[in-house]
Amino acid sequence: MASETQRVESFSDGVFAIAITLLVLELKVPPAGNSQLSTLLIRQWPSYVAFLASFAFIGIMWINHHRLFTHIRRSDHVLLVLNLLLLLGVITVPFPTAVLAENLGQPGERTATLLYSGTYVVIAIAFNVLWRYATSRNRRLLGPDVDATAVRQIGVQYSFGPLFYLVCFALAWVSVPASLVLNVVLACFFALPPAYLRRPSA
Figure 1 (cartoon, rainbow, N blue to C red):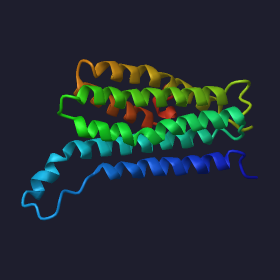
Figure 2 (cartoon, one colour):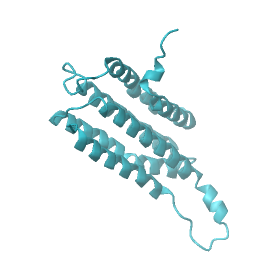
Figure 3 (cartoon, rainbow, N blue to C red):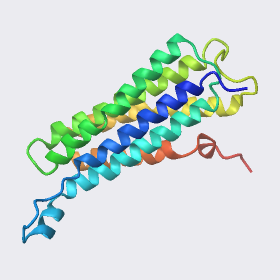
Figure 4 (cartoon, rainbow, N blue to C red):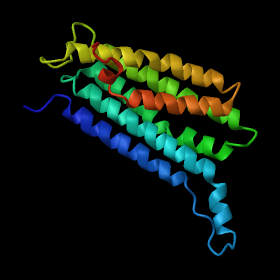
């Protein structure tokens, strides 16, 4: 029997695919016939860094979204709305990515980093709200064979998201590089399967 969430997952996958594809549009092709082509390509390094980082971030968000819906087997109106709010955050990622790429190493880099980190604060909150709702009320939206330990581990891992991304946001006022590095570290953290974070004791 097909899952009640099949259409939600298919639509969400499409949005993730569009968002991750839009990132490449920020990689500009230098004008043809320029003898300094290699220099112009090298000067675009902020765009390459922003593209690779955001590609990884959106990919990791897709992995986490897929992870959630392996447990969520039923949907209702509120879940659909919460999922749309999450996707709204995901589809906006190319914009702060473009702003960051354009302003790294420039006077506006702090503002660009605040926008970039702030976007992930909102997305982290959206992930938490969606998951908390799905697992509330005796887990009425979860499958009958749900792994309670996995559900708890996901909740613990996600609870760090909003706070740590707020740290990234605040850190941008002090050091843009440190804020961006912490963003990358957090992406790696959320790429880990929740079970990996709690190894069984010997």
